Length: 289
Image 1 (tube, rainbow, N blue to C red):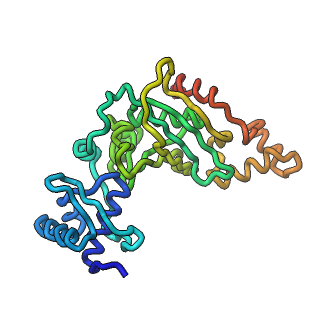
Image 2 (image 1 turned 90 degrees about the horizontal axis):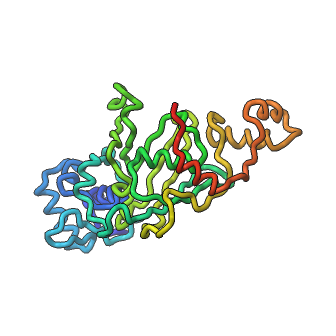
Image 3 (image 1 turned 180 degrees about the vertical axis):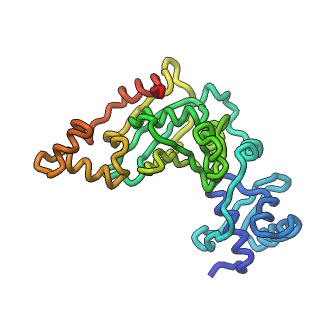
């Protein structure tokens, strides 16, 4: 049994959920708002948690709370959704390595959730905006930019507001204009992945994981795709389960839907993928609609 009271557990649950979602601890003002108490009450609670050996902080350093107990012993956070403004996030983030942005290369693995066998790509890119990252994911995977998309980090949803017009604010999302890859995938943060959702109907979720940050290699042109497995599903196939049915039909001449699928899409090899072709598509960019 963990040595904390229900109230202390609520504080710890919020702090853990926040760090899990954003890669750095919350400010005391954010804890106060979430728990529904005054900032002085939060400060006193932090001292109590420190004294009990449940957390530690660096003296004089903001956002330095570290939980010292097994997260599995904590209750789930049941308060309101944990969100932050991107501008605030960028402002308070600890500085990354002292390398200039144009000398860094981010190695990302993009995995299509729910696909079996796995469908994935590994790409390398310099620091780019989320708008450009959207293009790189689309072209590396093999999508055609025919539907809406969004990025998710923790409970934060980021979209291109130009695509939503007056409905944008009603969706509870934030405009990703100006937000860069380095802002969301901080190498020193505990959160090294984000979700890219494409086609709100079919619901294609991609897990984008930061695998490494390295120096630009002389003579190498970025972005590039360095690996991957299996073909991208067709657009409008009906999500993961629709894709399963499609592959079963299109690859089996005896299937009752084989001819219909060939007429709808044409021949399809689910195992086909060429990283060189993906790299070429990444460099050419998305088609203009």
